[in-house]
Length: 133
Length: 297
Image 1 (cartoon, each protein chain N blue to C red):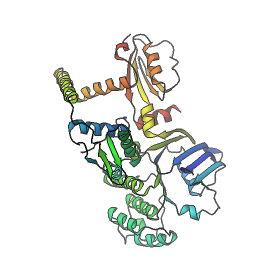
Image 2 (image 1 turned 120 degrees about the vertical axis):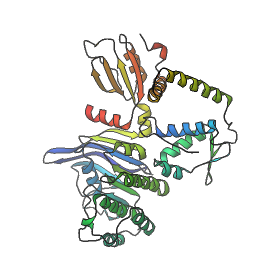
Image 3 (image 1 turned 180 degrees about the vertical axis):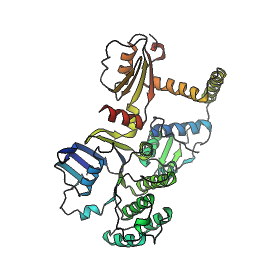
Image 4 (image 1 turned 45 degrees about the horizontal axis):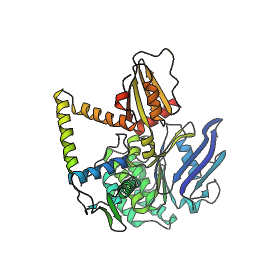
């Protein structure tokens, strides 16, 4: 699978990597048992800190998503399921929502900002219901 | 066992009564790539010169690999383990590229021929050109080669990408990442390019007026900091006393922007308790953390 990180999004890079691996599995870009790039290779390819890559792999390992075999590299866990029904369904919901928003005349950038802000608001523990007085 | 490549504590240095360092504390964990940020005159170069042993601190201590740095002491062993690239980029003007490499090599028993040749090729350095005839970028690359090829365990780089074109910047950054991953080298580098720091550093230290004002893991900082944007129904008659964690507050009319370093949920609650307040939270970039801290200090 191909990785791509946004250095200026404010989202920690290791979180972006973790999300991308999970997404790659959900999309079927990597399958159970397949190997991920080594820490060094990924750090060089993306020109990012190897400790950051290592942290992402540690998180994925402790979540049971990948298995790190010493000397051999990192592999997607055998037990991991491929694209799930829930994910397919979620994709449909997001697609419909985006099409709807686009029909209001919102630009891609505006839609992305709305989604990112909604996520950030959730992360900061502000519930949507209480946002207005 | 000591896990810090660099340990600085309570460092003070004045020049003609002007304090350059004002009780600086700084730790660089071994194996990290640490970005050293600060405005011009904040004390970065003074710190690096003290670490090199060419300036003497008025007070405080500096250790590299657990060994004390004091000018005049025998620093040869420790200097063999550190590669420096400094701002001035002074090199012997009468020598060619080839000559300065041949001149430098014998000082370092662990000299790496493989790295020397690799960087000559990668940086496209002209072996027979005299040093004054090199461009600024070429001189930076040459200094980087001399610092890396000595087999250093720690690289201290003062603005290593200054004067390089974007392709060369990416080459240098990739090489730093690669050295860190392949050889476990610790890198401590200063830079004004916040994007490049954000790209390769796993730790940062921000200094201002000779003191360290922010320090830690970049991921942790980014996870901890949030920007709260608040729009009020009407302009408050008296300034709001924000809770702890509001590092820097800006207000323009009915809009308030808060850089929060912690306590984000409580701050958002507080904002929401104001009449008609709309609250939005955003992740922040290193640039925002830097600008708000340095301006707010």
